[in-house]
Structures are given as structure tokens and as C-alpha cells.
Image 1 (tube, rainbow, N blue to C red):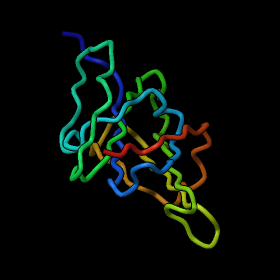
Image 2 (image 1 turned 45 degrees about the horizontal axis):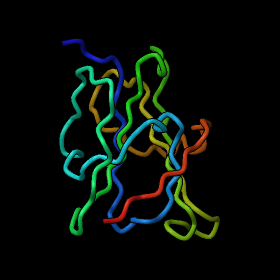
Image 3 (image 1 turned 90 degrees about the vertical axis):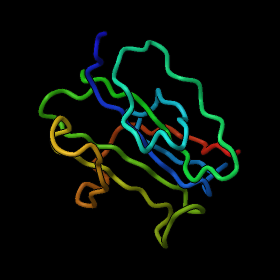
Image 4 (image 1 turned 90 degrees about the horizontal axis):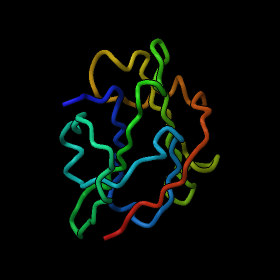
Length: 137
């Protein structure tokens, strides 16, 4: 079986955000809402030409997980991984409006799989954004 070359992006959001809008970097545009428990496991990288259908969440699911494939040709060798997430002021903000966070990893091919927020790179993720509506049960 052929193995895909690239990275899965998984963004876990708390269920209390159901019905709210969150903006993410365009690199995650072609994704889908995965089951809550998918966040605890690494997605498979075997070739599957179709994305799974969106998960149906039920009351009690703690997370909403947006999952998207970022192929290796979209992130060439030597290019860092930058991923932005922005919240509207009504959801998560301060006196300056809605907050945004930038996830940064200098070399995506090495080290741990998790990528954390790095405030040093806030605002450097200049890709277009895609608005997602967090699903409700």
C-alpha cells in the first residue's frame, strides 16, 4: 500500500464552542469534522482518495476535531509550519478584540507530533483564512 507524504492537521476545540465561528489558516481548508476520540490517535497515512464523512457529535462529546491533510508539496523542505487560529471577540477576546494564536514548528519532519502555540510568531501566519462553524449535537 502506498503511503501519503505530508501531515495531518488536527485542531481540537471544546464542545462549548458549538455553533460559534472560528477562523483557521487556509492550509486546513480541505478538512472535515472528525470524531472526538480521533484526537487521541494518529490518523492513518495510507492512501485513501476520499475524506471520511463528517462526524456526528452527540451530547457529552467533549471535543470537536477539525482534521485536514497538508501534502508535503504544500510545505517544502526547510519551510516552517505556521498555522493560525482566530476567535471572534464574543468567544475568546480581550480589550483589543478577538484573539488569534499561531502554531509554529521550525522543522515539521522532526521531533514530536504536537505543535504548540508560540507567541513569538503571532501575526506571521499570513495565509488566507477559512471560517469554520463548530458543530453542535
